[in-house]
Image 1 (tube, rainbow, N blue to C red):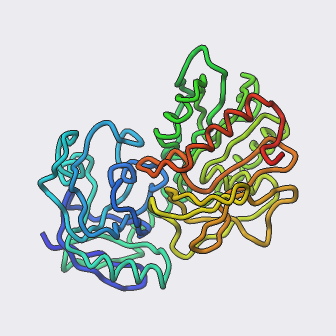
Image 2: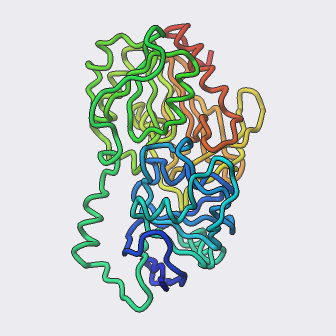
Image 3: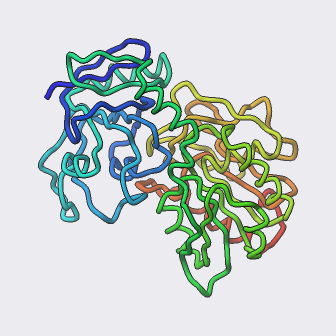
Length: 363
């Protein structure tokens, strides 16, 4: 069945439907990873987005039930150049199209993804709609407006609905605030031996602190950090407790706002597993996994915050630590999932912070 992607600026790209054959609306973004389509499809940070894969051949290794970052896909749609329907992998339990049909995710194959990516790079990320060839787009239609309203705060769609527990019941207790957390982050924390309590994004600071955690992790998640003012206010209270805090991706941005800094939207964001980041404290360069639309404003770095990491592609800020408080954060995903694993050392640093209670990582 012939289909097309129509962007908000009127640009149109033709292809063929795969997966579900339904109209789909979302922000169109691109991912530069050569693999990891299963992890990105189930990453809650991709909520409300139609993802364009820049690597031309997708689906080669099928899908499995072990590499999910959440229980089901969170993307709105998937755009590929060439789709492999006959995967070769001993762990595979089916092909990508079967997986997408099961979860009602629409996709387009046969699209000129190179041209589409270049257009997004020059014009910026924007809304798009996948629909059958011959159908017209009405951006003022009720379903489009309703979808836009539903997605104003996507964190509400992906955060846990109640408190739950992970890890070693006899380990040191830590709190994780779930803004759209990936399974990979929880697995990395489990490997450090923590007793983990996962809280909804709306949880009050007093509830978290009443359990006397030795550390707090602020997770990744979708959307604009400025749409979470209540979370920022609660975060200020967590900071004042002097409990060690590690922020990841959206959590990194929220920490910046809590300290009085600012965030801005990137033209087309960072998405993929091949972003070079320099650790300014060691001089080492790591290849990182990233997925975000927003970044810190260089002109409004909070007082007493030290920049620890920078992106070598565009110079954007990738990490901060506070020079007095036991707080640090990074913009990328140190747990990787699907990789690379260069930044796993950051979980070691968080572990050490929980043992040195109250001591800044910058010292």
